[in-house]
Length: 243
Image (tube, rainbow, N blue to C red):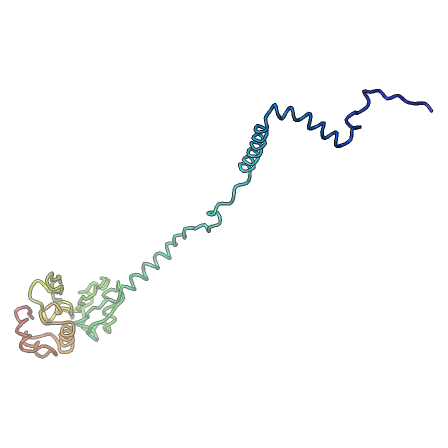
């Protein structure tokens, strides 16, 4: 049988060696290189590669979602339309309280009445039952807005309307309201009478009620007929009132 000769260059000498011998051969080839490079440098390089890889992963990773992103977004409430704002203003004015006025003169039922804020003179007269047949509507401005504590006097035809009561000013010492002069008992309202010394809200209302039921006062002495006013109180205010 012919024998084939294999060239030396075609034979892997390392592959033909046993595994243990190959491992020894690898260690023998690496040992001089490790000794030349240094074991410390080799370990340091490996650690540096690990650090660089970890840093690159940390920088290139997706950032965590910020906490603020999970919070609800506050939105400003839209401003109310003009109609709503007007209604709110109207509600505020009505909630301020009623207007109290004294209606006297040629009306069906003279007296003190409560009206809504912004009411006109015409509404005050209607609250008193309307004008008497002898009343003179031309002597009044029926479209005027009445104020709290105001007196609306309806004259008869041919009658000269009485002058309006003097303005009420505040007393800095007592905080009460007094008129800068004698108070007209036949024209003053309850607030003006309340400003007199010794006259409280109840007595002032009693004076107005007596005047409404019995007609104008003929003299200052007629005040003694009013409930709550005696001789001592009359003398205390005699110089401060007139008719």
